Length: 134
Image (tube, rainbow, N blue to C red; front, side):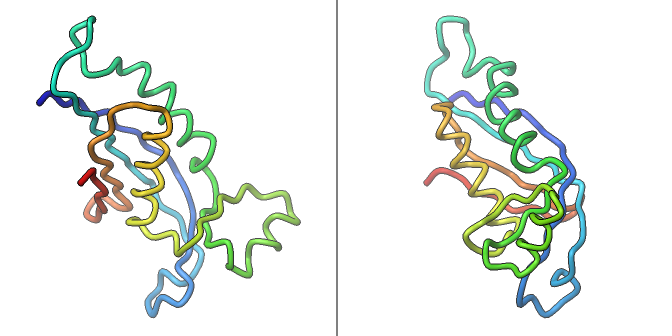
């Protein structure tokens, strides 16, 4: 099995409603994502995937949906206030934890029909969540 990875960095804010710690307050992170693709054989160009294609698909999706956005649960009472001020908000169905965001990015990568195997989502340099194909 062959695999390649592409890394992306971006800034975002969020908060975790109902969290007992300080993450219940709005705060920001410098996120880092590593998207790993895998194929049993190389394509005609001798690659799993072209790194530029990965950048132009999932990288662009990250720029459009996560970079410099407040990522909040759709039920968060801050949502209407921020939207009324024209602030960029990305809504999640559940709490916007690192685990939830890793899964969202995995699903986005799959929607581009790239052979995603794993998404590693680093919320801080020492904390990451991983979502991978079963």
